[in-house]
Length: 312
Image (cartoon, rainbow, N blue to C red; front, side, top):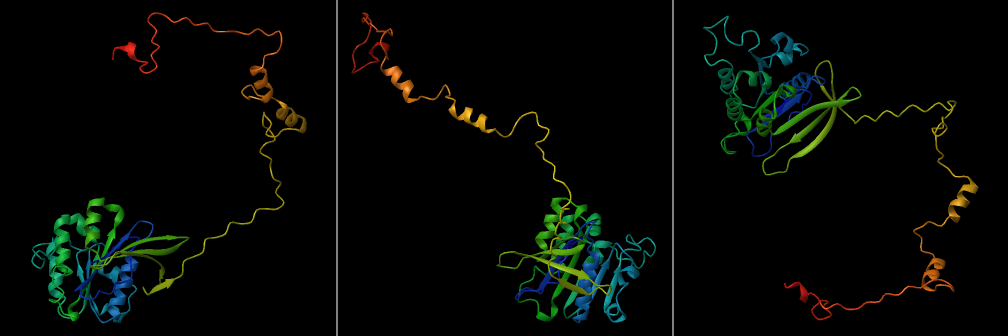
């Protein structure tokens, strides 16, 4: 499955060798919507001659098809859950399982040949289905549980899912991300959109790539180079510079006389040679002192065991 988050979407990934399908997830946000990218990927799959099934939950069929030409719309099979998601208006024609049965039925309708299934959106399905049930259904839908030899190259199924990341907690986001072979997160700067694409392939380390792009009015995808940061406008040369030290109550600099006085001052902790000589050689007339010590009876003068009197 390819996860396309709102404000995050990737170009459709090519299935790896030995993998029966491609799965991609796109995450978007309020600032960078991902439905335009989803429609661009749907158009690219249709131009490649694939069957394209769209499970529409958040917008009407007319709104989703808007912007496509007739050749693209003729290749789209739209499964509408937007007008009557709970099957109230036509209970006889509705699937008994509701959204879950509609999701499971997509696998049976793809038929033979490569196919693309677009889910618009995973967020809507998460609000109507338990997360474990949805993950199991997506896993079976993308045929990831089948062995590489069980699926012919012409029967590959690619699942594209749009996810509004800001609506969900870390638990559902992590579960859906673990299913996606390609995860695209949309962002941008200076009005230009970018896609942070995380590729996960079997027996390979995940790789991260950033791609700048724009979507044309006909939903064609145009890749672009990374925009340069705008340089700051040059400062006005005629604006006088303000000295921040003008109104201080203390001086940050010393005058020449103040510096000489500072250098000639002898600090009390400085042990100069003159002070050392004065202490070692007292001058004439200076009183000298002596210490007289008379050992006591309990004094321990044994140098071999000075702690003998401690009775340890």
